Image: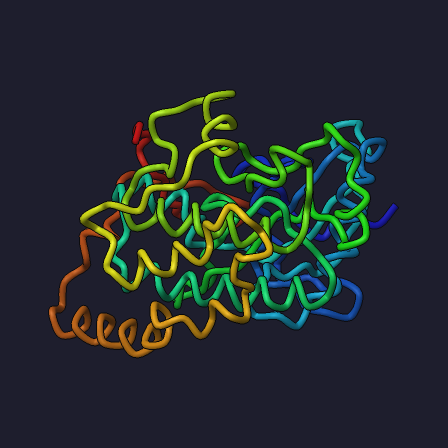
Length: 316
């Protein structure tokens, strides 16, 4: 068994099939690549690691995409008398879009445009390579680096196009609130389920409310089956509403693809708008309320001291 290349630190969260921890590497060399000083480890018991083994194979397909979380590889470690299978992943210091929402309830449309464009670039790459993510949601979109680049993470529920077509009846993938009607009704999975989930995500980011905000559990699934999404919200611009209408079409064959959505007017000026907002922020010389930390936790890994920002738990 290989010598440990990292020192495991605080737990960051839990994915579909593993616990995610922060780890310090001291810039160790792993299979010819120098690891960053901080990485994220997604780990599970080796005896139950099939899903993570499939996930690492998918992530290897997208190692050159700047809009999909990078995987440095996989390793097995023996910790606390347990054999663990670990994915060595890029660390997202900005947390997830779910964290951003908890910080400020809703995001300005200019920021949502920037993140949406990056996610669609990631989805275009995923879909064009024959993969369906199956669990797009704010918690699986991570913000990486100083620029807080949105990247798609957690491929634990992903399937190939062929697997999606042969999905067994009764096996539903994803998170209820973001499931497409065809998945709920017929357990049908095509790239269009990711587009529906993206529409739910964009609506939530801008309005600060779930698409089916007044329902829970089976009620959510009933609404997805039988009701039409509503886009009437004062926080949604006309372009945003029109964009959502292309994503949240109940008939998947009429839903726009990632490549089509990248040319929607809602996104055409996203880069220019984001740069303008960044310039205004610099000129103001003050931190935006959207980026002020709600709660900070200081922790130590080896000789390194880190501060991680956590949102206070709130109910939206």
